[in-house]
Image (cartoon, rainbow, N blue to C red; front, side):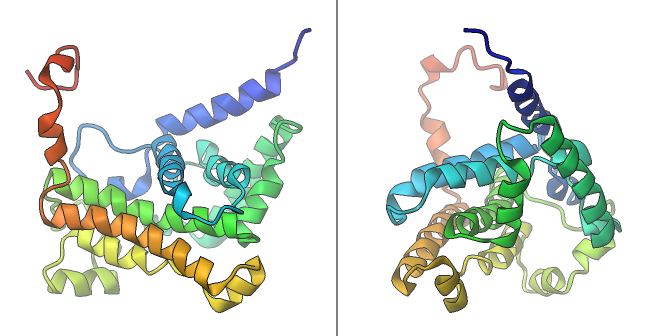
Length: 253
């Protein structure tokens, strides 16, 4: 049997382009690193976070919905790039170019997945699965900067950083408190890990289940933050078996 997989291949290639699209946050904060995270890294991290936490979530969570939301939620950025309002782009303009990208991708891969419907459901948070992905998406900004800060101290006085970022009220307040950038991202994005009573009704889940879901996501990020604070985050790397690393090109000679 012959298959016409042209549309499937196009979807694969659009997702692959995300691997060449760096996330804007680390760029704007002038992170000094040999390689910054791209959007495909981000999507895979969300998938991994969900996979390793899955056993703690209620059994009725639909894995296929979660996977679709993770795969599709940033797919338009293969065309638009990772746009941020902090660079002076209005919400209206971001919405305009994003909608063009969505319509193009939808027409290109029509019949492979119901891309626009998946994305619309995600943006509207129509179910608990979309809410879980959204919370993971928020805290991933925290885990990224916790990692970067743990590797090397981030200079928040770098003159290349946009003033609107450094002077953001929350950021400025935390800088006055002596917090580093990882602290700031951790405290800011952890606030997004919550499920209200109204959302419990919308998703038809119990308060107990909602609290269980948010607690495990919070606990994961808190563990990473605590290890960063205690300078333990990368200690396990020192115990990597040296005999298995002789062909690792990332190891400095």
